[in-house]
Image (cartoon, rainbow, N blue to C red):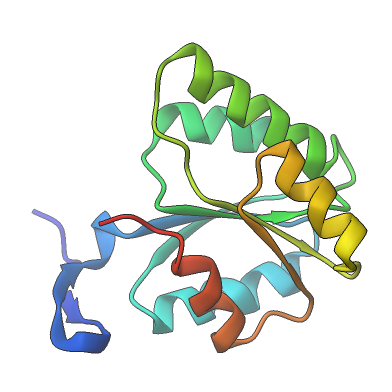
Length: 141
């Protein structure tokens, strides 16, 4: 038996936080802790990794509602991590997990580049509750 209580999200929908899991791929541990707290406030549990290769491994093991993808990772880039995840999804005929790039650079050219890679959108740091809600807006029920 788990000890995760269901919570009410906006709109009064009752959901189990365990079923609402996001993946934070961020090499700044302090930033990841802040983002994890924001997602928890919004009714989502979060796994965190600092490594793109580990992110791909986690995607193969768990069902995530969305992925917060830092672009400037110190291992493989967020761009490359996204490509690997999308390739895995294609090869296994899986529905695409929403991936949102998180970066300092969200000019129109960069946004186009991220979308061409298969990301759903890009937001700038720092992440706020409103930006986290934007990431979650791509989730499917």
